[in-house]
Image (cartoon, rainbow, N blue to C red; front, top):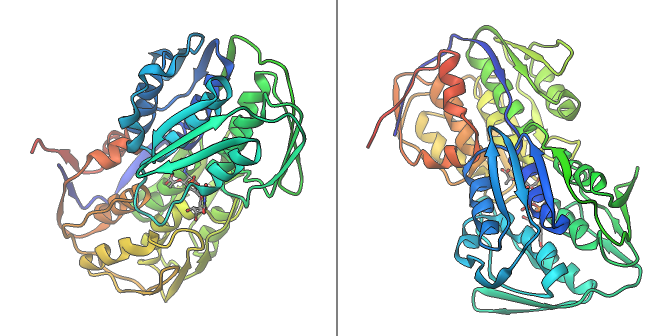
Length: 419
Ligand code: EPU
């Protein structure tokens, strides 16, 4: 359990950790390389460790040296795969493509997910079918078999992120040309493509979200690559510093070029920021915040994953703000929990909410099953009056690396208490 007290005079600098959403697809792609991989900047967080545990049961061995991961995927064998762990994380759907490429069959339970909306996997399965795999779903299991075809294929990916990643990995070693139209190009998708290019994959990207993959017969052995820093963590901290820093806080490793839409909205809300070069962003404590309207979008638009921290910022603005979340229909549910902290919000429908002006948040026991809402709630608790007691802390530890330690270093009054 955490005991959190009001902390509005934080100071110092914070270094952003490495991205979970980038690390997971790259880890899946290492199974395609089937040799030795050295991967820098791998976050040691719950989802990544679970993924490593799953692939360890198919003989992908690993060892960490700080955040550098040494993987050996030479001797894969799926006979003893721990399928139960697949239920724990949604990203385990990424295992399908590399395993099918080498073994031509896989039977797994439906992967897990956190509750932010309906999260079907039909596109993953149908697109695998488009390149000639067949699937059957039986109760809570999926069985996929087959051998990929060898002709040109054009698939429309509707900007869906993990499905785009799965499609890329499925087609790198498939003859001949795969064209993915309307592909997602989020920074973590680009990080996966960079990894595969280092491994000799032939992948081209056009300005209109089209990815073209040409067949290569084999991938390079001994690949060395890096995972990017987590732009979602940067956004979350930017909100917190605007509300709770003494004067300003510097964010290192911020990936400023991925933050333009968020920075534009922060400026519209009168948050003071300064680009200090070398990927360092200075965020000042900002009073007199203005209400703004936000609509989430695909990259490089305003991302769905930071809607919840942004709404906390809006509780401190001068008028009514509106949030339009286009993707996940349960993401606004956390407002129900946060109303317990004397918020005034109105959920208009599953995708739209209004946040009313300048509120003094008061502590209350609240909870969430959405990882990004968790980070947002930590911000709310730090600026709320009084002491908050937070249970189910394993959620935050599963998704953010040293989140609480980072805040403590800046002066946040967060105590970890054994329950
Ligand atoms: N969809 C389908 N069928 C599919 C796949 C997607 O209908 O087979 C639709 C669904 O409505 C689904 C939506 O498209 O909910 C989004 O799917 P997408 O593949 O884009 O997202 P995801 O794989 O479910 C990833 C991130 C999310 C992030 C979204 C949007 C990872 C592991 N997850 O989710 O990250 O919110 O893209 O950018 O990369 C997070 O990190 O907090 C998080 C939830």
